[in-house]
Length: 162
Image (cartoon, rainbow, N blue to C red; front, top):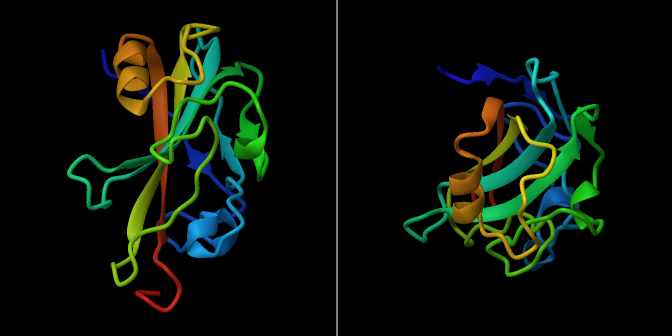
């Protein structure tokens, strides 16, 4: 059975448009604040949500994970701007931290596509800790996804492709 679709939007940026530097990593001159996200409620049986931000364009052969957040209560359908900086249920990003790590594509690259995905899960707690990697997260939730949706924003180092 295919998972249902969530509609994911942001007050910070629109689908396919540029993400502001407030969400970029300090290494790229940004404020490293996760963007505001909202999503439609998951289907019956949703017990929690999880969010990830992944850059498939990173020159690593496997992309770059900027954010993993899980165990978001089922009655919560949004995260305010900066939610990625607060302590809590964050997985381990490719920045080497259990927190949101903003965009910082290599200088000169065309804008990268940042995929903010929200997952509606059939578990209240996914049983993961703050050292959980994106690969482990995706593997362990694979049979628990009731719905998902993705919002894609673009970012390039200012002056390099914007």
